[in-house]
Image (cartoon, rainbow, N blue to C red):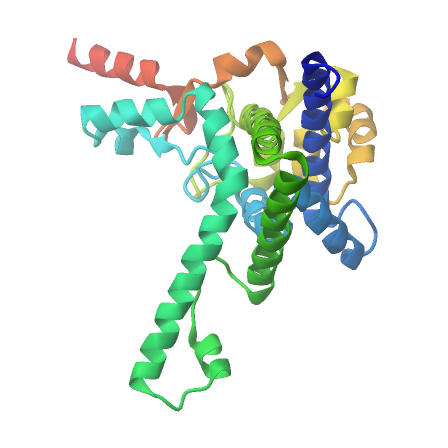
Length: 323
């Protein structure tokens, strides 16, 4: 900036790309696939998580549920928490419009920034407030109750284990401390502006990557009864065909069907595994960058037909039913 403002955009692009790679490697650490040592995966994952302000262990535990239920739309409604057509039909017209607006592709920009920068901090505050209320309730009924008994009797709503709590807490301390230090070092306006741009762009890109790897025409979207894990991996996950340089910056997460077949495969082996088994992957959907917008319309789940449909198709069906 001291030399020329035009030097900043290419640096921001590089920061966004490396932010994507750090998030991808953090993701691999959550599956304990990046290193052979579980402890090294935890430590490295925590460090990678700091880059994008995301508590890695807490995030990976939530992400593991996605892997266990991929394609089972009764238990997991994907990244957008989608509604079934029956649930959507019960909404008021204004709520239906809001539903579509909140799932518009452009909402990935503010939504992604909120998800990385604010959501973990809000969860920490809400969880802490919940614990304090619980502690006061315990002490009001039994003043002799010790801290250990209070902790053991508490059932947290925002994290599952003590390890998740410490992960969120330590991540927030380092991240917020980093914000304060870098604002002091570089100036709050400059740092927070660049940081917000990088975080917003990287989050939006990754949300859209994750979206098209599970939301597309013909995606496996089954009820719990009759759901099959392997079919969910092959037909409920796509292969994202992107240039090699972007595959490197996203740690080959584009081979998403292989990743869902076996989450323990390291990212640097996904491409080889995909190529050697291509004859078995004829049912895998290939997605290109130009297909992203067309995939974004499939935001309703037809539970009767076990398929994803668009809002336009929902209204067309209603019109045909009354005609």
